[in-house]
View 1 (tube, rainbow over the protein chains, first blue to last red):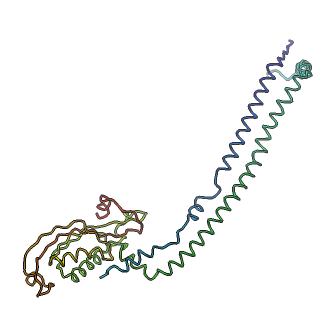
View 2 (view 1 turned 45 degrees about the horizontal axis):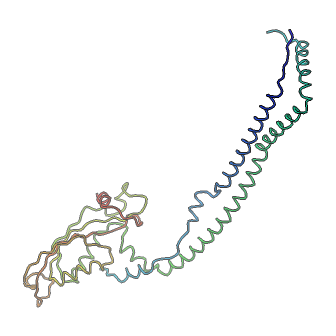
View 3 (view 1 turned 90 degrees about the horizontal axis):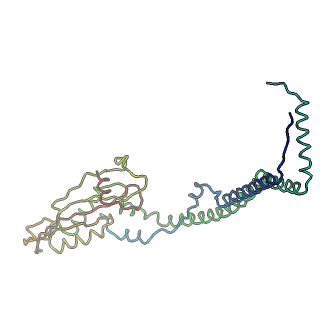
Length: 73
Length: 240
C-alpha cells in the first residue's frame, strides 16, 4: 500500500504564522498587564499602613481650660 | 496488535520526508518558517525569561519607592509623637477634668451630688428626683458594649422649688457644671407663698414668688471613650 503525501504549503504556512503572531501578541499583552499590575500594587502591608496613619500632636488645651473653669461639687 | 515492522515504517517516513524536501527548499516557505519560529521563540522566552525579570525589576523599584515614602511617614509620626508627648506632659495634671465631665461609667451618684450641691448653693430645694435603671460599671454592660467607644446618656427627672430668682440661677448654673448635663424640658408651676414658710434653705427675711419646676435632665457619659453620639433609640437600648 502506497501513501501519497500532499503538502499544501501556502495555506498551512499562513495559518501557522497567524497562530504564532497571535501567540506573540497574547504573551506580550500578558507580560505588559502583569508588569502594570505589579507597578500598581503596593508592597506595604495593611498593618504597616495603619501604623503610619498621621497623628495630630495638638491637644485642645482651651477645652481643658473651659472645663477647669466650670463648677465641680 | 501487529509487530513493529521497522522496514515498512522507515519506507513510509522516508517517502514523507522526501516529499517535504521540495516544499522546504522554496524561499517563501523558508521565510515563513523563520518568521513563525522567531515569533514562537520570542513568545516562549518572553513568558519564561523576560516576564519574571521585568517583574522582579518593577517589584524592586516599587518596593524602594514605597519604603522611601514609608520612611518619611514614620519620621513624621515619630516627630508628632514626641511633640504629643511633650504637650501631654504639660496638660497631664489637668486631664482629670475630662473624666469628671464625661465619666467612663454612668456614675449617677456623682451627677446627683453635683445637682444637690448646685441646689444648695442656689437656695432651691430638690423636692423630687428619680433615676432610671443604669449600668453602674462597664463590666455590667458586658456583651452590649460596642468595640468602638460611644457617648451615651440617661434621663434624670427632678423637681426643684425656690424663688423665681433662685430657680433661674439654678437653671443657668446647670450649664456651668463640669459634668455634662443638658436640660431637656422644664415645666414651671408658680405658687405665691412666703419664702420663709416654704423651704428650709431659703433666707428667712426673703419673700417672693415660689416656683416649682419639673425638669428632665440628660446626663452624659462615655462607654469606652470615643466621640460617636448615639441616637435616642440606641440610648434607650444601652440603658436597658
